[in-house]
Length: 173
Image 1 (tube, rainbow, N blue to C red):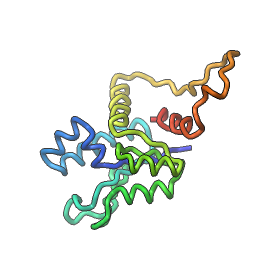
Image 2: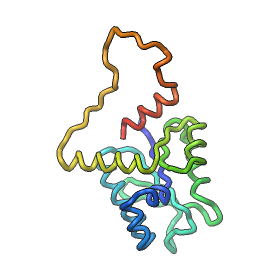
Image 3: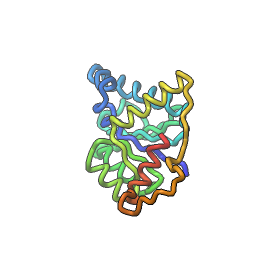
Image 4: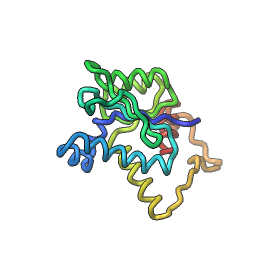
């Protein structure tokens, strides 16, 4: 099952140290730096990626939805916040979605709809690690985490189904 990564754009930019500095200089440069980072990541992992921004800060004469090198960029309508757009997308995608945001309102909503969630800082670290490993030529092992053993663990040590699903989606990053 492929995952659809839905990113709260300004949340990720403002939670990041490097992107935040660029954003303080110029908001357009912050968006472009985020997109460059995501384009480099998408070359490594071809997941479907959508970045949602608030339309109030949209560049003049821009369309509400554009596509740049396989990454969908959405701006909310005027008077609407990006959170509402993300919530609509999560409602439509359900368990196929992986929501990247540090906003508790969004992450709680996404989790209640069956979507996996990851914090902005943690996602940025995963992206940086993937890009670094690709540059150095290090192969990642896609193991399932299961090791055959006769030792009985019992149900008390097993994660809940939601947490196991969330963990498996994050492992795909």
